[in-house]
Amino acid sequence: MVPSCRASGAPLLNCCARIRPMETFSIAGATFAPVPAMHELSVARDLVDLVSQELAGRSPVRVVSVRVRLGALSGVVAQALRFAYDAATEGTAIEGSTLHIEEVLVAVYCARCAAERDLTDIARLVCPVCGDLTPVVTRGRELEAISVEITERESDGLAAVRCDG
Image (cartoon, rainbow, N blue to C red):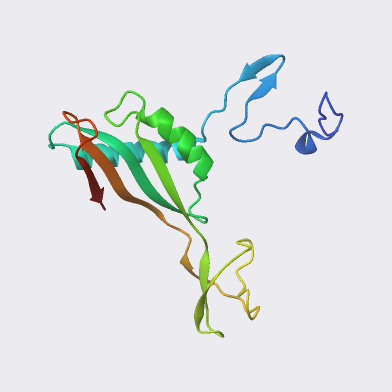
């Protein structure tokens, strides 16, 4: 017997009330806030550690923003990372900073065309021009910290400095 949803009667795997990532949900009348996926939370914590280590030993600064490059095949969901970043920075020296994510499309090298091609469907590694299989991924696996924007604490916004990585 396949378990079914009490609300819709549909099989639980196809249930209309299935929990979706990053949405509030209710169980037995109680509403729950979204929780970031564990993977994204550990990535966000590592990012906080990286920025904190980079700024250690500097005069007191305030981190304004952190910029990362995130590929579609990195295994990290951008929305979940944003949510996890806010949780990971809470109570740290970079609390209140903004996370900017530069999303990178997947690109492959097509031997027949002798060119790099952006993919529109990442489920199929085929050249969008000629249709050949293209197993060589050239872009889209990135998970890189690009830059940190800081201000001197005393001036609090007058002397912005950008640290590119």
